[in-house]
Length: 488
RNA sequence: GAGCCCGUAGCUCAGCUAGGUAGAGCAGCGGCCUUUUAAGCCGUUGGUCGCGCGUUCGAUUCGCGCCGGGCUCACCA
Image: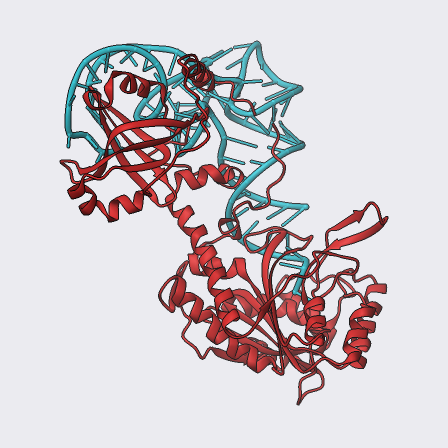
């Protein structure tokens, strides 16, 4: 999309003129002594000492004022005003300012003072152009609102909208807080394959790619689970991975094709321990990042203070429907779904129908933090059977603000049961269920060497950031969310 | 995948109901102004109105199709 406007042309001409004056519009470096925030913070000392500061950043506004100029420059910590007078910078530099544009990257040096209106400002003694900008920035007052431009050209969004920069700093803080929390508890951060010959660990459609030299099909991971459990077998008792996962599915405000997932596994633990861990970790992160356990999300105020509500899958469902759903067969489930005008494909398993119903009637109601525990056996082929009910698994999902944030099990470590469960999945696959999981022979071999009892947890980092940042869409918390290809 | 809404200057938006090829603010350009800050004042440039087809003497405006985006629903257990 070449800007047909002559605005770009005007700037190209300015750039040429600068070159003709013997000035390099793209010099190689600039030594900066102070960030904007540092100048503001240390301004008293700086004023008294009349020490020189050197600041640099993008010029985001400029005001000519007779034989003086004001401008704001923006760096990663915020903006700082600069002020130059012709009699102080000399005629040459003063005239040069007219060749600069809002958007240019500049460096300036001088002493610090406060204007009449009280703004801390650098009194420029000299400055240099560090990079010429050829394009106009979004408007200063209304900023950049068009979501399409904000997502596609995130760099503009970051320049124009201060809160966006803050949000992504918050995202990084969340991830750092999670890392610190786990590192302190003896978890080892590891990396496992993104390209996998057999995908597994979740019900999802994978992205497929090819390895040319080997002439084989490879899948981009949909989960880390099977590799991380191999590491538990290998004796790393506590491991975690913060990783991009890829799922070839629909895109909406809670789903991006690539997203960040935390998976962690702890030997000698079960799903109860995973609940306890989450009740520690989430409040820790919230406290660290937003400084409170009361989180505003949309119209809700979420109270993250543990302990959180726990309710079994069937108690939740029965409570909403006033009937014992656990006794329902496929026909009753389909009838109930049909009543609610929820589409249910033919030939899908009972536990899927149950979960469809759950998603429709229970999930939207789960506003305050809630663990839903003890799911139907078929819902999780990698989870261990419930110690008291052989038709349930020790699994929980964590919900808040009507969103699923985490999924965890007491991990299945009985290799024979695991094989059987895989075989069930393969049966479903052959029956046409392309979401069913694929038997992984090496994973079974690993389990046969013996895996300690283990608790495992998967948590959506993007969704966690959405909550803590009060962001309505996953696109708001991913720097470059997936978009259809732009035409140029 | 379905429904609804949107696409007009670099940005933020009017105009479209009742068809006569476009306006504002900011930005830009020229001028004045040596503590301004949404600086101000005077002057001024800038648009294949998302793309295509149709209806019409005439389409930014009406219809259809396409492209892109947003929201909702469905799918993603």
